[in-house]
Length: 345
Image (cartoon, rainbow, N blue to C red):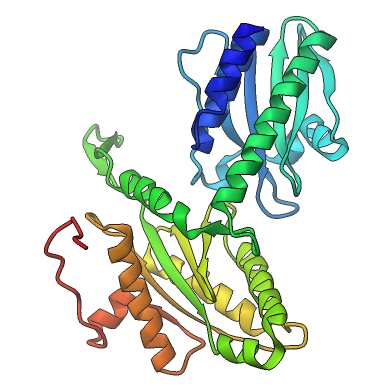
């Protein structure tokens, strides 16, 4: 019993979801001693779902493996290729099946709103009822703690990430884009540097939102914010990070190959918003500004560039997407001089 308590104490001692998932599979490997234990999350658009490995440990592994949060969906296993995982999620029940000379036990993982994935345990023998109950109890604690994290990290109205979680995510993306240069070799034997991923920051502002509140009231205004958050989820990919910064201001942190791809993604949201009929309010529009995340950026400096692009969009007709880099190149904005990577307040 003391071993279980120790693992629970370790599990609830972190505020980082990646670390929590690794801690969970590590605890279950020690307690159940399976062949392997893994957390799989079902991600992607309806009909195109994929399995994202959040954490996986085999019996002899020293450290857990996981897919990158920014993994390209096409490279992930299709959800339909693992129907038993889908069955466990759909029925919200524990599922056991024998596969060759080993057993697989699947536990659905749910949030307060939906079932998001499965915990999969492979064992040499059928997992006994006592072990199933122990795993189920640990998962309930895991679920409750995840709920507490959601409460502290997400906007209560829209369910998007809130402003206080932005800095940490931004710095992770910055580290990912500035890591030690990787190398790859071609068939000619020569080694070539591999470019690091590029990240883009966009700021979205609802046009004339104050008039919506003044004309229809704050309850209808809140409904507009909620519906816009749903349009954002439908317009961007599952791994793009979506935030509500407060009021009518939203932020997107995304990974794209180039500026054109990022611009197309933001233009898709602009069009989806323009063409959507909001109940009682009718049509609304958004102004969007975006910038590439640069080496040496702080969250504030990148946000300031995107915000200047939004301000330009609002001052030149609204309902448009503006790139900070293009505005500077065209002489519409002046590039701010960055004297230091450290900001003083």
